[in-house]
Length: 78
Image (spheres, rainbow, N blue to C red):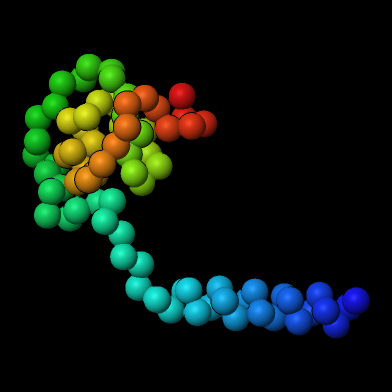
C-alpha cells in the first residue's frame, strides 16, 4: 500500500512540475485594455470578473482590463 501511495504521489508531483513549466495563457485580463486613468463612478453595482475578483461596478472591471464578468459579487466575496 505504501508503494502505491508513493508512486501516486510521484506521478502527481511530476504532473505539477510539468504544468509549472507551461506558460499560463490567460485571456481574462487584456493588458491592452488596462486603463488606470479611466474615470468611473463610485456607484456600487458589483460584478464578478473572470479572474475571480469582485469589482465595485462594470467600469472598474473594464478599467482593470477584465475581458468578461457577471453581475453580482464573486462567491465568498459578498
